[in-house]
Length: 75
Image (cartoon, rainbow, N blue to C red; front, side, top):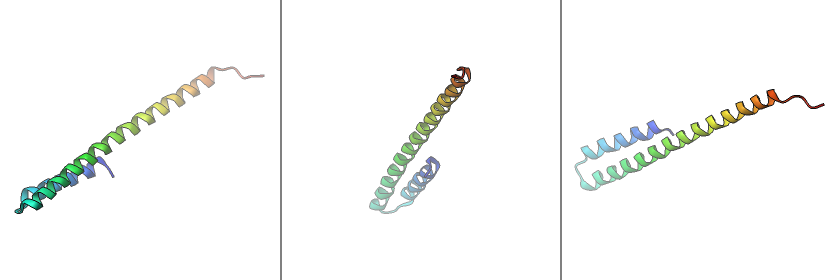
């Protein structure tokens, strides 16, 4: 699931909390909002980490290809 999904669910939970007449319902919705915001933060961190690792892997692969092009063949 994506950051955007969790953000949307958090916003929905906040709207439900604002519309709730009963305190226990409002509190439940606010707990849901907090949980979805936490999941959104984790999803965003995971996506950033994945992008960073992919960039590092691509750079290492490019360097390996570059290094291999300069090495003379062994006889």
